[in-house]
Image (cartoon, rainbow, N blue to C red; front, side, top):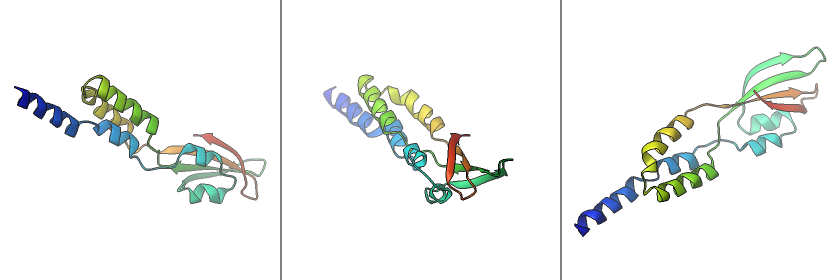
Length: 125
């Protein structure tokens, strides 16, 4: 009986933390780095893909960039605590939830640029 319990425990440790790893391992750019961009070239250097360009009546350019979403360390920690607190039962709900969250949904940023391509304003689009 002790052997079966030990086997179940080891198996649960091996199979657990899928949602934790999914939350922590997403590639992307932290939004804090995007917020610090001062020039259009900074957004492109961070991996932003230009989606749309418009001109305003004032002569400014409005561009929409797409960025991959970065994983969340705090979400991964929360999932880890939930795993431990529920004896890994959290994985039954956490893995499908994180799978949905982790889908390739980009972060869209609208940048209003001065004529010299300096960033005037950044907004979530």
